[in-house]
Image (cartoon, rainbow, N blue to C red; front, side):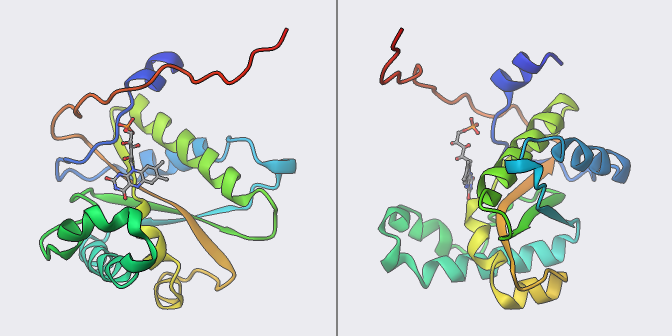
Length: 187
Ligand SMILES: Cc1cc2nc3c(=O)[nH]c(=O)nc-3n(C[C@H](O)[C@H](O)[C@H](O)COP(=O)(O)O)c2cc1C
């Protein structure tokens, strides 16, 4: 797939087939993710790959509880209260794979760097017909000391980008894009 086509046609996928992604493909996607730029080439990203659906279900439940307990501090999420309160709602949409991009905070650009790696991952996945979605809902739970301990993530690491991957069950709904908002173009 041409890079431009991948950029234009990638959509957040929220319905997945149950099929697993072959390990070799997941490894290749991680290898492509790390070709992203990073501040001073620090490459501080580090990955946790989850294919354990039971653990993902459990993490989804904990992520919802984490957010519900903090809704007062995050009024922008109030509209999701119903969804987060639904015990059957899986924030990972039944995807077979969750890639959690963590980083040490050693570099001043780790948030940017991990986001770059996440986009590389999502575009490379789409090139192979694999859908993806960044699941910001998982960030809080993924940063708790308990989850880090369970996943073998050092305490000083921070989860920046939780990204699900899987084969789409149906084409994702189209989404609108506004034209670029150009504040100034000085020549
Ligand atoms: C930082 C970030 C957090 C996101 N969190 C979620 C999420 O928790 N759940 C979800 O379904 N989509 C999430 N998304 C996906 C966005 O909703 C999606 O990218 C946006 O609606 C545009 O649609 P598109 O990706 O299909 O172009 C997130 C995207 C980003 C960049």
